[in-house]
Image (cartoon, rainbow, N blue to C red):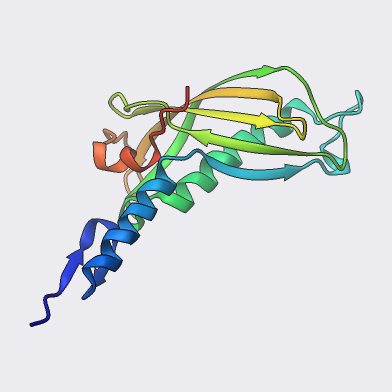
Length: 164
């Protein structure tokens, strides 16, 4: 007798329970890690001081948040909601020059409050030192109406990492 197993919350439907369990385990493992992306400083990122301009770091913080949402969000949630930044708090402890790279790492440090969610972003140089660290606040909006939307637990859960 063949029993079909459907794991709808993960978007998986299979007749193989072992495969479904392994898929969910792998997905959960990936979702409990910070999201990472590499950035390389181009000549047009460099300011008169010879290193990456502060405005570029702000753009990279936003790029990290967007890439994380695009990679992890449930497609139904991505279709329904959009995020708007409400605050950036950035600490600069170092910098990089043209041609040098950093690894960006982002995660949500805890539960959302109403329509607001905090996000952390760290940029680490090749020596493993965090040179730029940001705490940002985001508000979730209904894509269709542009009105604030309470961040439900199932929307934020895949992004929460205990990384502090």
